[in-house]
Each structure stands twice: as C-alpha cells, then as structure tokens.
Amino acid sequence: MRIIWAGLGIISVILGMIGVVLPLLPTVPFMLLAAFCFARSSERLHSWLLTHPRFGPAIVDWQERGAINARVKRISTVTIAGVFLLSLIMGLRPLILMIQGGVLICVLLFIWTRPDY
Image (cartoon, rainbow, N blue to C red):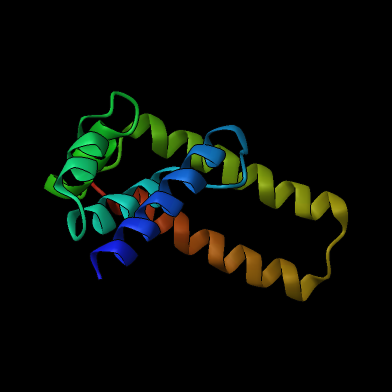
C-alpha cells in the first residue's frame, strides 16, 4: 500500500509542477494531496515536500492553521474572474455559464473564508 501512496504522491507533485507554468492547472491542491500521500508512504518524501522553499510554507500553513496567504487569495480571485470572463467572451451557452459561475462562486467562498497568514 505504501507504494501506491508514494506513486499517487509523485503523480501529484508532477501535476503540481506542471501547474506552476499552466495557469489553469492549480498547483497548491496537488501539493497538498502529495503531502497527504507522502505522509502515508515515505517520511523522507514528506519531509522534502514540507521543507521545499517554494511549496513547503503553503503546505505547512494549511496543515497547521487551514490558512491561505492573502496574496494567493487575490491572485486566485483575479484568475477565477478572468476564466469566467473568457467564458463570457467565448459565448458559452447560458446553462454552462450558470454551472461554471456557481462552482466558481463556491470556490471563492471557500478561499475567502480561510484564515490569512
């Protein structure tokens, strides 16, 4: 079972790193998932991820306080608004826009109700 958790963690790290350069693929959720998987499979990989200079602080803040950086909240909000605006410009069907808008509002509510650090 540890091999499966480690494999899922490695896949999550790869997806998270791809998300660093692709704006529509989120990075932090994949890194949080990787931390979860590594905690169940490899103390060494888990420690590496928690001490990583780029990803570690966000993971530790989430694990200890459920907190999201205020700067990240603002960037997320602008990105979400941009994605919805792009959907409007593309002229997607109203039903799709309503579903997308509802999901994005829920995501924003979740993000903005988390404490800052």
